[in-house]
Length: 297
Image (cartoon, rainbow, N blue to C red; front, side, top):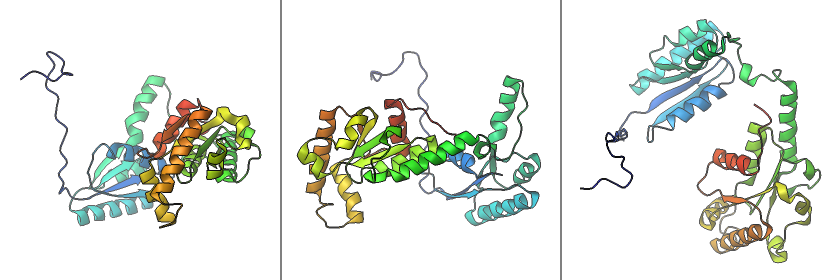
């Protein structure tokens, strides 16, 4: 039998991926932090997604900033392990060594995310870390950044779904697309995560009849980015909102999507389909295509 086309001569056989037992017990997963727990949850979730089919029960435990809270957390972790019949998984970003040591006493797999990276960074940089609790999400860390993020959120909410065309020149990006194609959640994600001022505008039958963009958007053509979606998926989403309506009918969805895509092609607007993409993927593509840089951390 000949080797597959992409095989490398002399290379060792590829290691087959681990097979997840479909009957594996549900694992309790805890994200523990002396701050908000967002960092622990984000990193932990990214790691868990590599194990497709793994059943988990997840809980974030923020503000574990005292010994008694740490002991209470351990009790909850151990009880979960007893109930599940299998050790829980704990993603820990506690900065304080004493509270962290208490968590390490739990009958669980405890993954200390800060400990994994802080030591090597200290050695490489020749600097000692501050070990400051909640530093990554502190509002006082950079007041200008914090204020900009709030401004971005307020701007994005005010310019959602074409509510106003005032101050569009201040926007970092303007999303266009048919109703329910993902404009609002993407706009809010860009504002909350990256501190970007995002407006979004629905393309409607009036625009298709004119075969032109709304006049208020024309001066800001360079900031436009389009979102589209498969008509079948759009019909499903719209039927959840307005079942059995013309708005949600497959025929109407096919018409609107086709007209919106034709309009974007004529106007030279960059666009992507949101059908199978997560909000994070959509936002990252927009950042790359429109050459935007995040404003906040």
